[in-house]
Length: 119
Image (cartoon, one colour):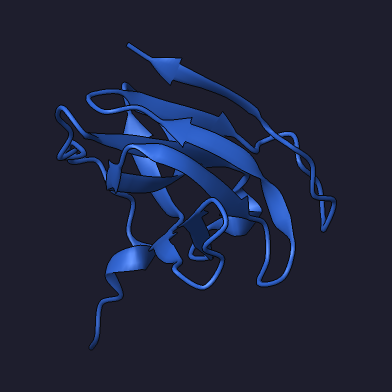
């Protein structure tokens, strides 16, 4: 029997590799996006995309669905809602965690999500 790691609930701590010139990005999504790949690319470099999977996580007794980019060089990034449409931009700051909340996006509607940095 094969166990798919992305199907399980992840309750272990998230390890971020951030520092002076490297930050992290956490995107909160709805349950419908579980196991979907989310992509980001440096602004203006649409073909240089990095992706990560939306996983179900249990954090402080709460169930969340998140895509975690644990290590991104500081700079401005394009968020990709699908393969061809940008879903906004986010600035990654070294030593900080940026957060994007897509939980209010329904269906294929793509909007510039609310973003903020955690210090």
